[in-house]
Length: 224
Image (cartoon, rainbow, N blue to C red; front, side, top):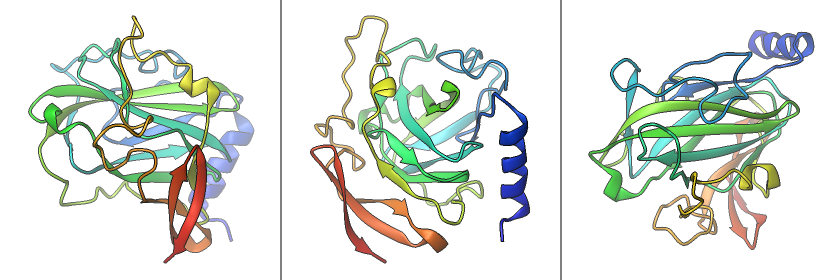
């Protein structure tokens, strides 16, 4: 039987022609249902003097979102440009979510050299109403997170796999297009780089599968 939370999300999706997504962790700098389609941060401007700032661990941390769409594709990226105007680095290949509700991607890695600096985490969703954006102001800190935020949950029946997404890959990394993506090309040292073995698929009842991306294809390796 669907949970009350899922029924509420279904109702919202049915009632709104602009059903969007929520960024639960790191803390969003702002959410506007009407303006979430405005790049790069859903119409909000990053301001470290007023925004809620999250400590984000470079060796392993999480990004927690919630979608009101039954299917969506996600792009997780980050930059040391505190204005969020460019020089983005993709933290993962595009992730396809085939379910409605909460989704938490664990083991997110950013370059270790970013520790001790401020930056911005960006989440972009590609769904039925186009590209949607939210940002979080963060302090990049060394090490791995030793706790999991309560918002890091996955709806029962969630399936999330790496995919190819032309709409997301066409987003420029910077105003000049000079920045390079480390994780998406598999050339970086991050543990989340394409081609690495990592948990990304959640089957019915929340069972965790291990997959590996080879040549753009997602291959199921084992089921726990």
